[in-house]
Image (cartoon, rainbow, N blue to C red; front, side, top):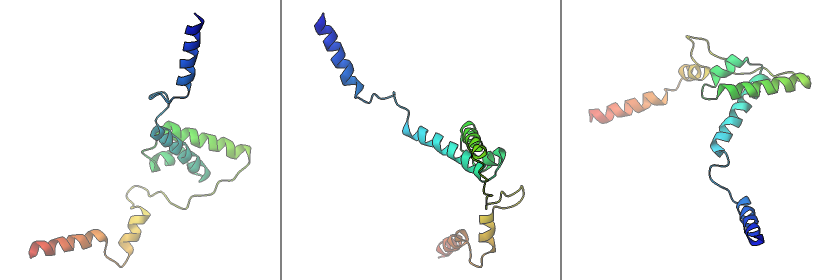
Length: 125
């Protein structure tokens, strides 16, 4: 009888040091969750509303973005921290994003136009 207890306790001790598949969460999932919470916190610090944050980050899980936003809001209120306004402006409907406007207003031709021109020359030959 005592040998069975000894054997069982040895097996338990050996398994305690092993990483059993399926016991720990997937690192990629944990990273995505942490990124979504950090995104929410950054949106709050940048004085963005939660809806703007959802709009700018459509791939992030909304509940986690909100959790990060809420945590940062509580932290900022508790420590009397003023947010810093965001430099990037959200384009309203019908407007192009600032990056696209910068490309369109530059004197150089966009890369897509150059590739199309090369492709038409090759077809003409």
